[in-house]
Image (cartoon, rainbow, N blue to C red; front, side, top):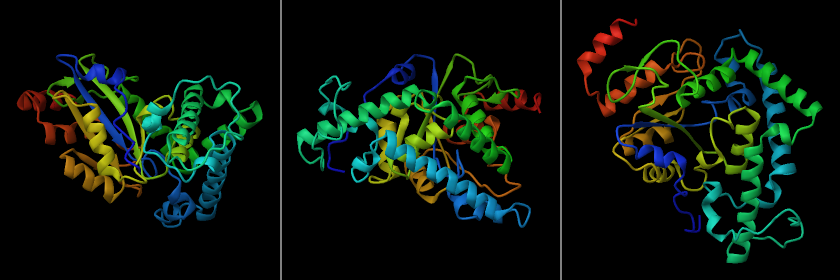
Length: 326
């Protein structure tokens, strides 16, 4: 990093957290081996944990297919060959250098872009980030033809079947966390009381902080069907700066006494960063039989972690109500 990055501009979500009487739960997710499975497929460690019940070679093959899709999309549509060595922690990191120029006829292959050490090249990188943000918002149906959509759908379904619905259940859980989908089992919300997760007194925001570089991480969100649940402005890469720095930015961005944070991931770095921030941390464990995996993780489990750190305004009442729903 060159010191040019700042906290992303405040957006709609920030106005929500300042609403009096509202509690905003910010879920900070890791990506690999949490919301998706990829490295453990490529290395065979996911299948090996099942002690012979899963075909290791099949998992490796599936992982390589995903890897090929990710790299191809990065290079073909997201300028990755040009900007691979200039990773930023989020897409708006250089937005102040973007002068708003119309890019419809802009030639990205002939603009002389090189290392963004001066203002001109920072502006060229900001242009690329703006195009990437727009493509992310449009989604893959606007960039894939019908044949490619079919290949993509088949690979997703194949992977979901092989991983016992890890991908689709993780996505469904994100929908629950977003408040877009009603949880069939009511849960305890931090701040007290047995509530529906769609209760309008609570707001919910999903943020991704991944140790991977930014552009492949955005492409993964698209390919693994997470883009309509995690906005491009809520995707952070800790590749250069570390997870603690990203968590500090997120804390500043959503700064309010009514905001509660929870970190969900599988690694030591997000665990240590969460401890430093005094935020609850849920460790995802892909091993069969673990409750902290997909399928398996529930909103009720999340609510317990929230309440341990943030407390409940009426703990005894919560416990009584909770027992009536068991």
